[in-house]
Image 1 (tube, rainbow, N blue to C red):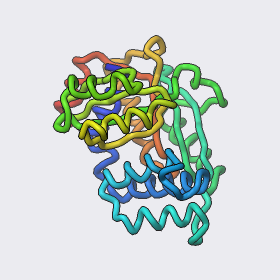
Image 2: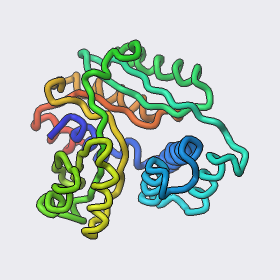
Image 3: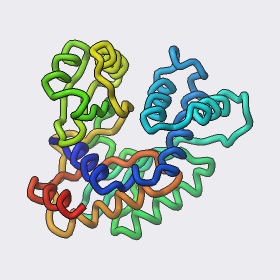
Length: 253
């Protein structure tokens, strides 16, 4: 199991994000707005918008809220203009961290992200500082209750599914960027519902950094603090940890 999957597992168990529904909706609304602004309001011809809308529906966002966000993106309704940002840095112990933002004030976003890194014994780096340790991939989350690992494998193996990371509650299907839509369609054709689907920065296996002891909590505090910022959409890290440490965290959550 990759570090990406372990961090996802920890987040779900601890409820670091999902428990704050209002904040989740804010992030989803921003993604829909930007996707519609960049690629238009037609879901059929705008894969990013289609994925954003699917994710919003999976989070039980009201249809009226989704449609309003789309209209703001296409300029049919007045609204805030958001700018995308990608920040790179190091956390405690040299762990690599990538942060995606959508902000109406880039200077504020930079300042807040830098402050969190500094507060948690990390540092914000220059563009390209850690990106080489990651790969851009498509990631689809499928609840284990909806399909077994074998079912997933059969459904996606011919559509471009690269890897399946197994979890207690959710399995993650990884794809190449250009295969994401084909794999999503394969799941739909096989009657397998998925919770989330998006592009992500996945750490390369050879660049995973194992962390144990007190270092685990330090890194988790940094990642949670970053994700708690309003302008931050997603946070990625290359940290890994022994199974014993993961089990301990799950028991304490």
